[in-house]
Picture 1 (cartoon, helix red, strand yellow):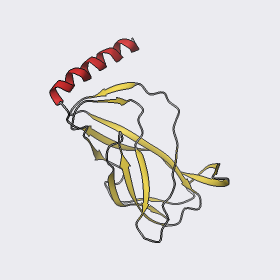
Picture 2: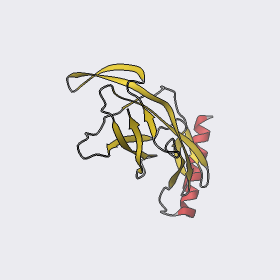
Picture 3: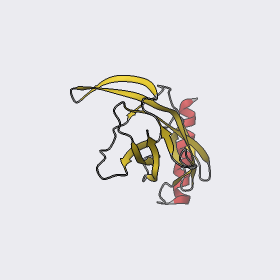
Picture 4: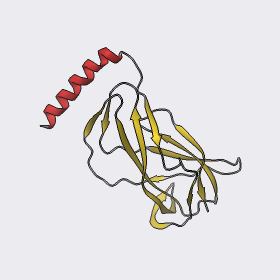
Length: 160
């Protein structure tokens, strides 16, 4: 059954290529956790884990489970994955702040190929941990979906 589904998806994408030509993939983020103002996080929030990075031990704390981003495909059909995660990066808003390295968390669920048609809405998620020694401050959040250019949310995350 999976091979048959993959075959029909390939045929559909091939035929859609005639209609869309070389049109780019276009996905818009329609809803995000930052739409109603900044998200405030107190560190430590929930205990996370201890990991070794670059020869030193770093403790991380869990920030949020499954931040949801509602998206809409406004371009050509896209072959996606049913269990796709958005990529986030935190950028300092003050010149003297250092960037924060996030540790992404996955739930190890197996995804399957899906076809995201033009006009279709769907959700992607993000779950990550931040270092326990993360400095308090305001951060800009950049979000990328399916490798497309980042959507930037200025002053979207506050660590207290």
